[in-house]
Length: 174
Image (cartoon, rainbow, N blue to C red):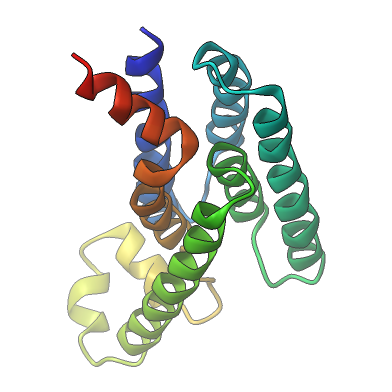
């Protein structure tokens, strides 16, 4: 049961946040809350040691502090900051967190370039009138749905995380 929850909750939350941010420019608080609460419950059930458990919270606090600064200066949305922090809680204070941050930086940069290209394209008129989210993406005063990069980076980093690796090990024993 623990393996199934670990295998489903984090990936589902990342996909949901990515799609939600793309379509509505919103990452709901419940996504970050579900991630945090489920980690708090599931990590001890996986047999995670107390010192490793504490390091996951250290990663959470460090990322929360940094992203709060970005949010306060208006360079990051609140939903993005909360999702990054909850993701750091799942990944822990290790190389997977560094990998996640580097991957999301690259993906976020690519996403930003694509959005800028789209906003400056003559095709906006054709695409934007069909779908609400396409019209929103076309507006220059709107931000970038960075949750898409956060979600993809989270999915790419997750298998090497302590909980992801634990589930893979448990499944290999079956």
